[in-house]
Length: 349
Length: 280
Image (cartoon, rainbow over all chains, first blue to last red; front, top):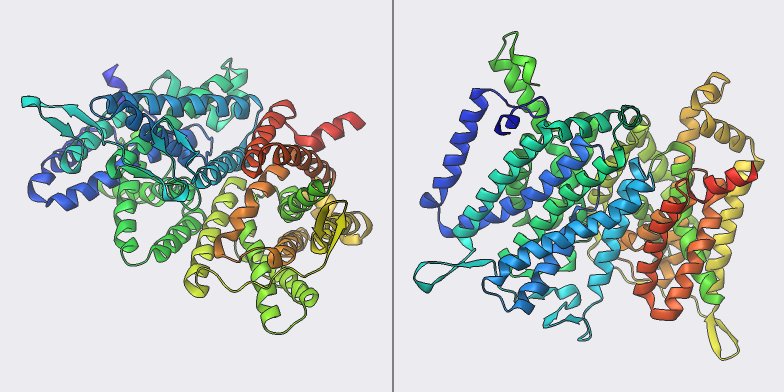
């Protein structure tokens, strides 16, 4: 089972890769000891978006389904977490809210995915239908300003967004409560990313992963080989969308608010930019690339949000025109080629 | 009935340009909303400059069409073999344009007001300009029909749509056809913006208001735009009007989306695929 972390569908299988993986992980774990609390909180914020990018990478890069609906599921789970956390009265029940919210996103993915995949909606239509759903959700949430829009105790508040829910927390020693904020949220995010990343690697190198790559290459051929393409696509869609839901929950918990603007445009374009620029063909590239873009994006946003978004648009445009496979993958392959010029070096690609 | 005409006009006007580009080249132009915005801004700018409204609207259409041709030559042309990448490239363009406009012209400009005039039917009072919009939608459909069915360009365009290589070897300049088609599509988007400019506030993100409607109409219409767009508009306008009257705008929009999702489950090739099979 564990051997599956290495395999043909993921870049970076040798000891050199895993040593550098451990170095980065240890570096990430000791980082809060040296940095000030504000920076650690910021890093936690960057990390929580990575799940959404990984989910999109799985659907788009490996299975060939370009979903523009990542923020749809992000919003569903984010709002669901808020509503549940407020109605459960916070406390340890926030963990239940986390699980339920992600399950709700998965359920939404199941329903939407069923209609799209069984309707044989492919290619560009898959993208624009998921995007339409996302925009309609954003419009809907935007007009929930009135007091009649409440679910239990939770008011949705239209454009101003919902706020006032407890962050994720667990009971800690000495009757204290550990709230996942700042560095504890950072460690939670790191832990979850490691789990999700290794889990996805195992999934991708398993039989399931090989089948979805076959579907990406040629759905008809995969079908003729006896696989029910639709089931594999649906499962992939659910996993990828649930990861977006996980991002949504962590986001709501991080800032204790969520607004419709994190669902609609231009937010819906962001995961696409991260994954396209990083390289949709590999989850390691997506993880590293998305994180780097988020850091850079935040740095520019401080000066001008519009400028940052223009840069994102320009990045998307240049990526597809110059390096359709993504920049991070391109650079990584170049570096790999420079360092290991042996006959066996290319085997892992 | 009047509401129906209104919704129908909105769907057809916002979708026509997108449908042409998709039908001809298999490209979904994500910057479609920005061409609409362009048409609207040019119209309002010209009106502020003292040009009468109809001429200003013509100016908006032409500006959008010219920009459309430029965009086709510079960007879209490179992606005909990779439709998904063209989606991403035009989306990137759309982000750049929207945010660029926010920086350059600010978040809103002064509107120009709906042309006055109204008539009454029974106890309801209707604006004449709404009739103009409906007329505009019908005119757009008629224009598409005339261009593609009654001109030499149309023959070449339909040949290209059916089989680009074959058309090329028979002497059709496929590149030019594509460029012109994209220009027509952008011009129709500009027309949508120009016609709706007097009725709404101009903001750089206004394209997003139209884009859902245009997407779903094209999706329901299916691959053959000449056959599919109008029936798809009729169908969706029916659903939308009924739900609007029953439970308000937002339910109308959600209901329309749900209807679309169910329709594509039942008719995977869209309305045009369904009609084509029936007539065979």
